Length: 163
Length: 101
Image (cartoon, rainbow over all chains, first blue to last red; front, side, top):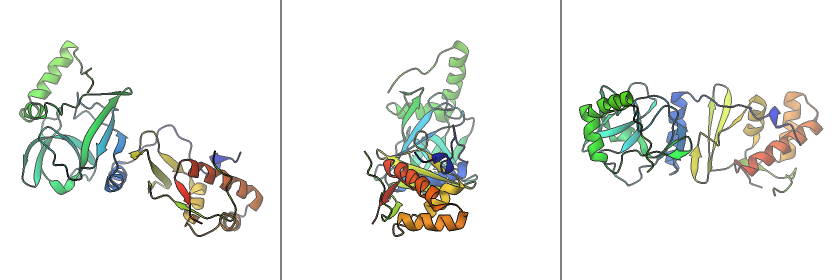
């Protein structure tokens, strides 16, 4: 057999820089396909934790609702961010990380890449809070979710539920 | 089982891939089972692999690709042929390239 090592980079885990991730995600979604990648950061904890595998699907004709989690291009950094809709108005969304202190502000719909449709942790699906989206969004918007997460951490409670 | 690659055949990138060059390496994301999977299906080519990839335009035969590479890299065509066929076999199996002619 030919030496594939001459051509293929052998690697365990490749670090795809944020801007490149955005480009790849945008192109995959533009083909009408979902995009699966490993999320980094704590801003959506406990629903999405650092290292969880997130699937983002194209919006197509679906209109996102309050409580849905969107992938979008951050207006300043241009990198991909995954946060929840806490309020919406025609043509724009107010987004916020469930565990973030501050809202992202109002985001034009054109900066939305897609909607998060699946989260996996250790190979199992994790609840994303979409079924009770409006309630979760309200808790996230008012900061109560962040406080509840802190309280749950102190008491050792965790999000173990499956979708 | 994949058919042996013919030297007169021509290959080109599948439409079901997304390709980006990142820090000197070619990153290929095959849309396996309809999903662009950066977590499990990412495929990367090094500089030599990229040289092969850039010649896969759907028109050049495998023999021509090998011949051009042998000249560019000053390497024996016989050895290169085996390697290029091996790479194409893997790329075709992953549906990253398709036979165009």
